[in-house]
Every structure is written in structure tokens, then in C-alpha cells.
View 1 (cartoon, rainbow, N blue to C red):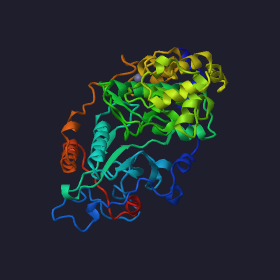
View 2: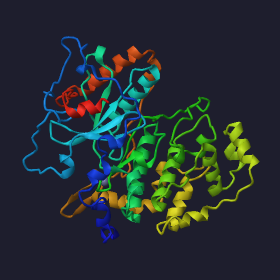
View 3: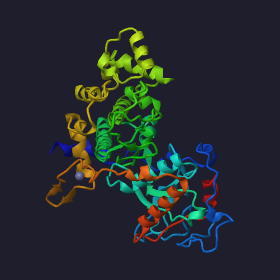
View 4: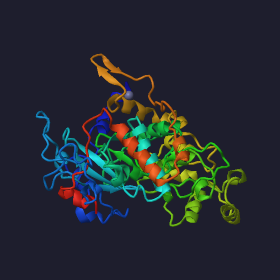
Length: 460
Ligand SMILES: [Zn+2]
């Protein structure tokens, strides 16, 4: 098979050689700046108001200063494993998503480094309550290697003191934004295997009826072995089948925002995520943001500079102002040939797929699922399933491949509970019950260690 050629090591080996990764990726202390999420609430396990009988630290989380935010120290590592430099890093903040802060912490039950996400201000109002519950349910729903999911949820205190939610996910080493802006070489093999995994994860999400609505390089986590997972579902929602229902325009980081959203379309679908992936594909090739505008109107102008003035049929659902802006301007011819100049990797096949994703009219844009059938992704698929996936395995006589390379969700994600959620208190009860039920029969529950030094910075 051509796949076992010399190039294979490049992708299956280290994308980030050396031990510098931890220092490049993790931001330490004040160099991160203060969290912009306005975290101020203190979990009441640490407060004086916790009533008698409040469950505290089920896994003896008290104790050692400087220990984990979620965990006791010391932990015992499996004797056979020597921790890598990254595993020996102290617990620390690693990033801030659309909603919430993410920490790198040690799980005391097995010594593994994991990511701990704090979801703050959950019960401020009904909207935030619904949003967080939706994200939490999604994280517990996902079962796909290219979509980040919850490994665990920390045990909540008694409901009267329940203010914040902490979710544990797998810890990834970096994200695509950091890779793109780094001096690290990005070969065509890298780009193909990244794009394959983005679309593989996206097909799964869309098959569950979920729109991510904020696909951008920073929300695509990667490991040094090039495994990629889509993360941050703070803006995700279930697809709205009724075109008369209005959907918010406050989605998608501007550079990756689809033209229909920029034009104020009141209803949109999964095609907005495919547009974002198209922008990221071009960014991987050119290593710079494809449409980097200062304002939504300039964003639209940059898009029409490349794609040409859209036909009237593509403007049908645009708001009046956007339609007038486009029709008022000069007629622009398409200039798609500039895509060939993105890099040497911008082959005819690459540009062909790119042009199917960057289609102005969402009805004519390729779907995530169909994009996976494009020949450009054949090598990425083979590479992924030859040495990276968990669905295929090797036997002495060769590789046994899965029957379904790009699986869909077993069932759609249900959000019917949202309509019956009428008050913050009711939401609090529901979320509390959800977490408690989710934990039942699983591993020893964890909760925050308010005595740890890390905890004090964590609640800042
Ligand atoms: Zn596989």
C-alpha cells in the first residue's frame, strides 16, 4: 500500500519535537493575564455557609499546598511508567474558552494529567443555565474520537451551595491556532490528516443534529501525534428545522463566519460550520487567516473579493442592509485562482475541495459528510486509520480496518427538556440531579480541594 511510504513517520511521529511543548503551550501565572470571564464566585465548599452534612472531599482532597486544584497529592504513578516532563508540570491554567476557564490538573485516582473546565456563573439567569446545561449534556453525550467529551464531572456540593460546575476532559497538548502560528513545518500530510479529522468530527456532530457555531483553529485541539478533537461547545445548539424560527447572529468568531450569518440571515444550518472549516483549510495551506477583516461589513467585502458578487438567488434571506450593500458595490468577478498561491500544497485537488466549501450560497455548499468523499481526503483517511485511530487494529498479518470509517451519532442529541425549563432554581435541581445520576456506579467521585495553592488561583 502506498500508505506505508517514507512520509508516514512525519505525521505519526512528533509534531512538536522536544520537550519544549509544555512551556510553549501552557501559560504560567500572570503571563496569561486575568481571566476575561469574570470569575469571582467561590465554591461554597470553601465558604462558611456550607450546612452541616454537606458532602466534602470524598477522596480525601484536603491537604497539601501546591497540590492539584481538584486532587490530593501525592499520587502514586503506576510503577512501570515514568512520568513525562509534561506530566510533571504543576497544575495550571491552560486556556479560556467562550465560557469558562480550563486548567491542567492531575487526577489522583490514576495520576493522569487531565483538563479541568470550570463553568462559572451557571445560575445567573435562565439563559446561562440553559446554555451550560446544554453544553454539559453534550459533553456527556459525545462518543467520538475527534470530539472532546467529558471524562468525569466533579461532585457538586449540596444544592444550596451549588454555584459552579467542573468538568474533566482529556488533556490535549496544543491547538491548531498555536500550530499554525508556530514555526513548526506543516506538510501536506499534516494538513490532510488534520482536515480529515475535523470533517470526521463535524460529520458526527451534524449527524446528531448539533451545530458547533464556533469552529476556529483555537477550538481544534491537537496532540503531538496529530490526533485532533473539536472542543468548546459553549455556542453549540441543536439544528432548527423550522426556517421561520429566528436564530441568534452572535455566533462564530468573525474571521470564520459564514456569509449567510454576516448578511443577517435569520435561519441557518450546518453549512455555517463547513464554511468555517473551509477558512481553516485555507489557513492551514497559507498559514495566515484567509479573511482577516476589521468589521463584519469588511469581512463580507473580503469574501466577495474572492468569490465575486453573489447571484441574487444567494441574497434571498439576507437582511435589507446587507443586500443593499452588495448590490450598491461594483460587480466583482471571482478571483479563485489566487487560492493556488496559498502555498505549494494548494494543488488542483486541494483548491477544488476548498472551492466546494467556500461557496457563498449555503444551499450549494458541500456538506461535511460529502466533503469526506473528496479524493483530497483519501490519504488523510488512510493515514488516520493506519496508525492513529482507535477503531482499527493491527494483527500479525496486517491491519484490520473498521467497517465504518466515519461513523455517525447513534441518535440525535435531544434538547426537548429545554422547553420545560422555566426557572433558574428548577434548572439548578435538574443539573444537580443530572450530575449525580451521571456519576452513579462510576469511579470514586472527585471534588475541588480548597486547600491547594492552585485552587486559590483557580477561583480568581
Ligand atoms: Zn480506524
